[in-house]
Length: 327
Image 1 (tube, one colour):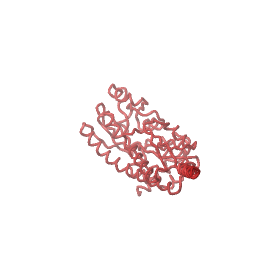
Image 2: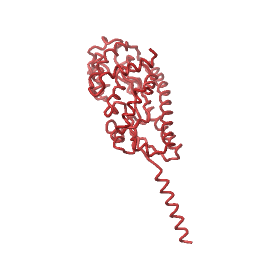
Image 3: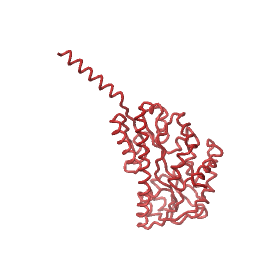
Image 4: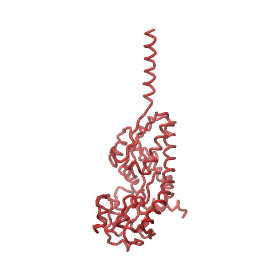
């Protein structure tokens, strides 16, 4: 009797080990805070994946830079870790340079245009190149809003921006873009921006509607000019070797849920843009439309400042956008 019980227990142990061997836990790292829309959408996605796979695909979300982010984030993927990186396209550009150009200045007029661009043969080819470099792009349809000019006067034309000291992140593409637009870009820490505007160290900054509201920067700069000079987007990246650990059914579930999450994120982003614009108007903020064609013409030169990008990449992307717009 004892031997039978021992054998049964041993069999149960083997079964449990077999089940455990089929489970995979993956860390997801992103810089966005837990309270932000994009993080909330990704938490819902991973919960749904966990539910639909009976816990066999367990993606743990680590927001707010708890784990490595930016370049170090994508390196985890390339090195084959059980890892998902959530970063903008410029970091894939370190491996497939032209991906960086898709996040370049003055490209998209609407969220729909960006989403349509992600469905082009151009992006499909770049995506295949990324996979050869060790980066499988599960989805690149996640957006977090357009960036605009936040100042104390309207910036309708390049002449209005000429020589103005504008705070930018310490990123070459931001510095080059604002310089091309006619501003004097100032790479200062974001934590110093409010006081910098207040004291006249800078005359404004660039950022999203949500940034303007959440930081109360409207207290010191109450005009937002809708330049749309950048669109904030991120992709969802995983190692092909980790992806291959999933069964075809699990892969389909993961792709379906990230696609559904992207759609939900876009719908909620549109709502938040409207809600926060109304809240900012209540605080006395004036919204102004910009001559985006004039700024677009000036920023075309930025695409020549990155030698790793294809020489004609701005024209290639522009041709795709013309098709999307039906021109």
